[in-house]
Image (cartoon, rainbow, N blue to C red):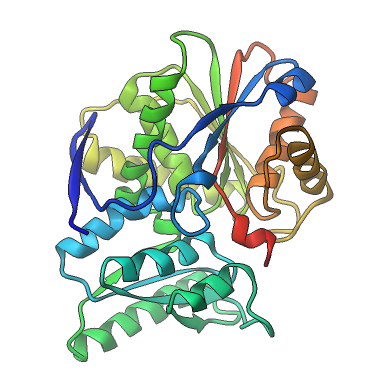
Length: 325
């Protein structure tokens, strides 16, 4: 595979041809009737690499950068059942690179879900136990130093590929939706927010395209105050670096009302939301990300928060591996 370029509203964005794009935008007729407003799903779960998911969209740009640096090994991190780590494990060897994964937690007694995929793809796991995010960052940097000393060329991808480049890569998803939606109407994008790169990219995409859409993220990793600081930092850095002529606007909301007991801890609201999505539309939602965001969507309709909204685009970020974790 060789990197190619594709035009975007910012110019040319180098990428490697991973996955299948554009991902589908599906109208959800039974759910729309049930809720009384138009609901669509952006099917990033059908992105066509491994178990799919939104991380593939980021990786086709981030791994192009790794190839440009002649990287021999990529290092990244995430939860034990990280969708991002699994996607990286699958994609890296396709491009001639190894993957080393720093997984936050202890090794499972039996590898299941994404951990099983990691092993099948040949990635090297490093389970970090109870280490903090800062401590894991230090472990990754130390390992990168060891690899350089051994003559390798490491390329570090941050948590969730959530850096300015990963954020910029996500803008293409907004372009895909914009090409399918009719002009006008009050549109709201609803998405699960973990490491916040996708939420930042979707928000930035509305700025780039000058669309008067609102974006709502349901935090599944951090409390709202910390998440907002991270989000604002990502938005500012990505806009300045990749879209310097674009003006920001206050059209993004971020809440932790569906966080429950924390990252990876299921909630009863999310369980009921996932059952409804499967029963009405055949959508599989995982308890860590998408089911919590979908529960937030349902609560927004019930509470009247979406009164006046013409359509909701539910950004299905994937997470199939986590269902079987």
